[in-house]
Structure formats: C-alpha cells, structure tokens
Image 1 (cartoon, rainbow, N blue to C red):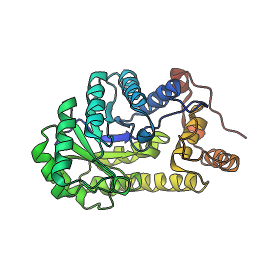
Image 2 (image 1 turned 90 degrees about the vertical axis):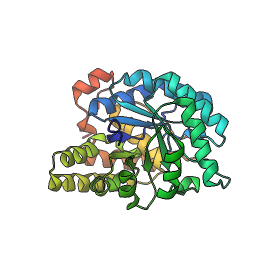
Image 3 (image 1 turned 120 degrees about the horizontal axis):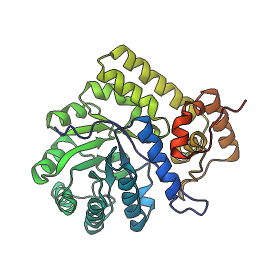
Image 4 (image 1 turned 30 degrees about the horizontal axis):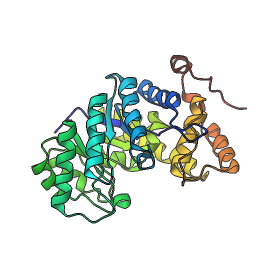
Length: 315
C-alpha cells in the first residue's frame, strides 16, 4: 500500500472573482491556511473545486498554482477527469509538468462504457502523467460505480494505480480496497472515523478545507489509539457541520462563504448554473459561525503569515 497519501486531504475550492474568474490570490490563501492548519495534502479541482465547470486552461493554471504554493509541504492530488480520453491525458501530462504529486480521475462519464474501455482510459491517462493515479469513485455524479471487481481490472492494467477516493455508499468496500493494497481515501467526512476503522488511509471532502482542524482532531486521536477521543471529535465535527448546513444554501456556496468569513477574504460565488447564497442565507450563516465560535479559531500568527485581514468575533 502507498503510504505517502494518508491523512486529511481537503477537497479544495476554486475561489472566484466578482466577474466569475479564477481568483488566484484567494486560492493561494486558502491553500496556505490549510497547510498552516496541518493538513496532509489536497484533492485539487475535484467536485468541490468545480472542475467540470472550468475550462482546460483554468484547470491547468490551478495545477500550477497548487504545486507552487505547496512546495513539497503537502501532497497534491490533481483531478484531470474529462469526458474524452484525449483531453484527460492532456490535462494529466500538464499536471505532471506542473509538479503535482499525483493525479486523480473520474471514470469516463455520460455514455455507458464497458469495463475494458474504462481500463484503457485509465491506462492512457496514467501513462501520460506517469504519476501515482487515484481513481475517483463518485457514482452519484458519474453514473459509474467502481466496484472491487472493476478496480481489480484497473489494477491489473494500470501500473501507476495507487488508490482511490471512495465516495460510493458501499462503505464495506473500503476494507476490500485496502486488502487489495490500495490507498483508500473516504470521500464522506461524516464517515471518516468508521472508514478509518475499516482501513481507510484518510479522508477527502469539501468541508475539510473550511474547518480542517475538526477533521485533524479525528485523525490525530485515531492515530494516537484514543478511540474515545476520536469518537468525540467525529461527533463534534458532525454537529458543527450540521449546524452550518441548517443555514441553507448550496454546497459550494456555503463552503466559499465560510472560508470568506474565516479568512477575511472573498472567495466568490459558485460558477453558474449553481446559485449564490441569498442575502438572508449569508446573514444566517455569518451569525451561526459566530455562535459556533468558528471565526476566532484562526490564530493571529497564522493571519499575519498569510497576510489576511484580522478575523474578529462580532459582538
């Protein structure tokens, strides 16, 4: 099993300017904030990063930024998935040149593909980058579930295969994948601790990049062998995330808004056709994260290092 890619891996957002373009300065600050928090790596330009709503040039620039900003301090797994093999391979080749540590890729989607076609897709893409490859098992979005049987075919045909992000509901497959020698990152942060007990090597999810310390607490407690503390940390993360979710709004919009509030920067709205938060939702969210004492958990030393505006509790 590849032991390089384990721990807490935020599925990082793609901040936008008011004009809806990539906000490089905000992107770098979100990355740096998470590195300073202690995360182990990033899942870049995945579902949380809105990659399929970005053009290829934007995805390529994102790969360059994250490789430059991390500079070996955190592992970067760059998503390169696209509908065609040629586009995906081109993105994979560029990601390798940019200096990321690994690539990840959804299976070919929209049209139904045979197992052999899926394996061949991954073989060509992995060969183009010649980096560790992570399969992105996201069946509710792609319509393709990578089962253990299909994964075995991929493993037999793709020597660069290192592991997967498992975002399917079949939690029991985590154990099967790890017994295959694969690094299995659970894609649902609410199930991080149960997945770790089944052999998962870490967690990838969007909420991690707005509140990394909550999931680092789970990871550290579990690694220390303190299951009771890990259970308490998982319960705490679940409750805070649930409280934030009750304010309403779409997944991407909420994460961007929380990061904007925490870091004192503007991460923008999700790219259309996703809706931004309404004024009422934004107010409710701002109020709730103050009540949850989320804002005051960014130390001044970290704010100074990042060049952030001071984040203060609103009385």
